[in-house]
Image (tube, rainbow, N blue to C red):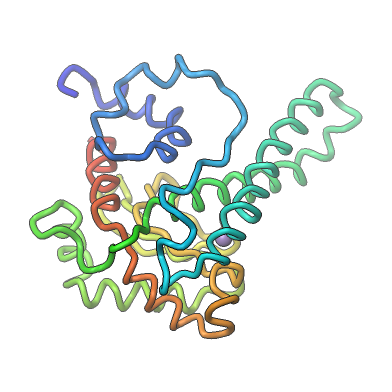
Length: 247
Ligand code: MN
């Protein structure tokens, strides 16, 4: 993107995050040319199809969990996000008499939109035949080694963050563009404890609905299984995109 200034790029990023995340992501950073996003219709969110079959992540993630998780849980966040947008539009039109509801609806908007974004990422972060380590020599490998010491320490910290989420939430590997470094954060529910501007690269859902059918209360076994299906090539592509957008 040689003719694109950093400012233009960031402006684009701000309006394309949803679409960017929902891309299959196979062609990397060059997929978000400046100006493209503003030409897209600002329609409602849609449930993206799973990029594989429900049973493809067996025996690590079972087909029944994948079907419920995608078709019911993720679908509910899409519906909830769109409902919140519609409700805000209605409140703007009605005006003063309904304005006291802004707080509640804004909370709903954050919860459901973040749920939709994280689940869309989650499906991409896994694949049949995944696992192993980030590609040797990749930017992702370099940054993980620099910021966490080594891959073993990184995986241990990420697993512990996932294990220790209070209640329902996520572990998220984030690229923080101000310092251009990686962080591991926990997200309670979908939206709390996030780092502003941080670009999520790798996400792990530790809501009970993500693992209870197969693993019951054994969250740690589910976390162990997750590492066997991680799609590192996709995480590396997101890392490249994040570096580009950070300028
Ligand atoms: Mn979930």
